[in-house]
Amino acid sequence: MSLIPVTILTGFLGSGKTTLLKRILTEAHGQKIAVIENEFGEENIDNEILVNDTQENIIQMNNGCICCSIREDLRETLQLLAAKKRKGLLDFDRVVIETTGLADPGPVAQTFFMDEEIAEQYLLDSILTLVDAKHAPTQLNDRQEARRQVGFADQIFISKSDLVAEDEVKALMHRLTHMNPRAPQKAVHFGEVALADVFDLRGFNLNAKLDIDPDFLKADEHDHGDPDHHGHNHAEGEHCDHPSHAKDGGGGHHHHHDDDVKSFVFRADKPFSPAKLEDFLGAIVNIYGPRMLRYKGVLYMEGTDRKVIFQGVHQLMGSDLGPAWADGEKKTSKMVFIGIDLPKDILTQGLEQCLI
Image 1 (cartoon, one colour):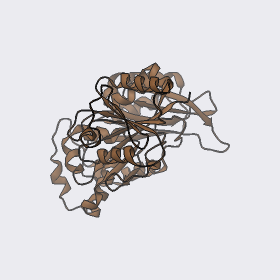
Image 2 (image 1 turned 120 degrees about the horizontal axis):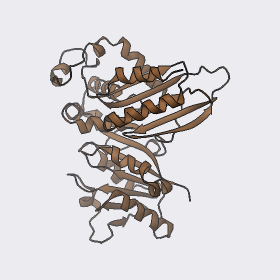
Image 3 (image 1 turned 30 degrees about the vertical axis):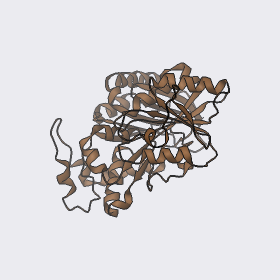
């Protein structure tokens, strides 16, 4: 049986997740989708369209979708859905998991790597993060959960952009790019997202997005030319009153936020020693794993004529042989790390020492 693709939907309260889910659950799109709701939170689809008293907590919608509230463990719910599908009791093509507004999507994503039974039945497709343009600047300043959700994203949807000025939307997008350069951003109206932008993004499929998004490199080059970017580092533990930066009249487009969720890129033209790299990454993940949100790379390794693709979430890391280097293609390694206050210098020096 082919694997069932799973999308994790995350975003702060009010960002439009419920609107998007309602649309998925009621629209005639011809796909049979099972939505799993993490059930604590202020806004719940339940109240609106899921008034029911069944023991099962699985409801079949008119358009063939299924909605399921998690009363117990996510893993048990996924096992139950897969078992019912196998026995022909339920028919669905894919799963969407909505995390609560304050959740860290990391552990949800890790379920699909750590649990063999789940990994044999499901394929994690991507993490989508909804960001509310009106309230995001405050939420990102005040809540680390909001910043983490941005760091995890494979795709960011910005809702309510029509409620704020265009330069504010640009400043927000600029800020989000610093936090996570590998997630494309789209401004959307209240959950009106084309389903093609939501599904089959293959954010976790190691071989799919081989060359880390081209824009990702632009973001990195831009860093070096942005005088504000380096001039605004805070000492460990020093507090920074973000709202004041936002009002310094700089046109809103400079990077005035020293968010703790940041990304950095490592590049090298020399090949890596596989043994050294494995040891170093293993050690780094042991120490900094909880602060490492997403990391990904295309590597030039000694001893193989193929690209090596690697990626991880928190402490879990995987790698895979990609396609062969093409004739005349410049062999280089590119890696991106997205995390909370990661020590860029330690990582950079360590990676350089793993080169041949």
